[in-house]
Length: 416
Image 1: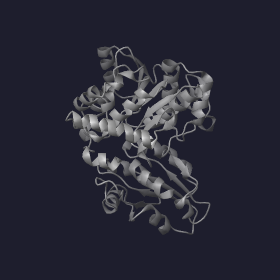
Image 2: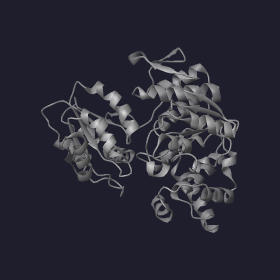
Image 3: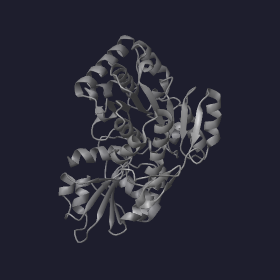
Image 4: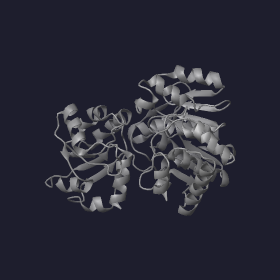
């Protein structure tokens, strides 16, 4: 059924609020009947911040809906109803109802708009305390920005990505993200080089802002965790020092907007789960293909310059063994900047296709880019499994699979 709707509705990125507004009106405006909503935008860290907030809310006994994108192994991961991935039957029902209304009224939303409308319909029909809502792309013209009164907006770290759509500077991208701020709501902003963009827009709409570095702060303390506003916290469950920033955004939101208990916040930090972010695979077909049990496979969905930098900060921990990379990437990403940062950490890079994405680099194209920016010769492969089988057997090593969340989705399916 999902494939049917994917063919009927445009899967390309189509920004604008006209189509989603018309569709929601025909559905009875369910976006106006949502639970208290936290709206999250940014280039990197949105999913991790939502994962922390979800775990914190649930530790405090709250019922949580969540809408995130993209998915990894299962499209239904995008829609969480009362803490659980939406069921097949309910998802199909919502899509059919939304499609019927669109067809009856001669509307042609994009595929993302159709799914967003169906999700809002499900969220409005299912009682919950909180909705954690991630923007699809940008903010100002993103379909999720049809909501009127979130209790808070969280802006995670911003870097250059989707420049052809959002703009070729941090100021232009920040302008797009700032538009999820709403009147009388709280805005929680990660450290930014463009604070004036958010200050100006907040003044225009009447939002109250809290800035990292000014109104709240954190300090990493290695294996001892981190401090938030001078108070000690244990290490978050998600790995990498960049997660301290995401955790601090979540703590600020939990304190200032949700008024959660301190014990729930701490429990949520320790229990949050978010697939594909510096995640170690422990079983499955790919693990079975390794030369021995001393080898490790790690996966990370990093796919832009900002994400490459935070992964690069983590990789020195892997200095005790050779590190091989398996990479695939979409042509819409800046592969040159990405591999200029990460390639020096890899002993060998194996490039693979992303089979279901027509806009992906071929292994040969990606290998040429890696060679041009690093001088290293990359090896082209038909699949991740074939790459693993080609790796040298006379050493113990680690493998990092990265470059695209869509590649990770294929990997997780292949592994299990």
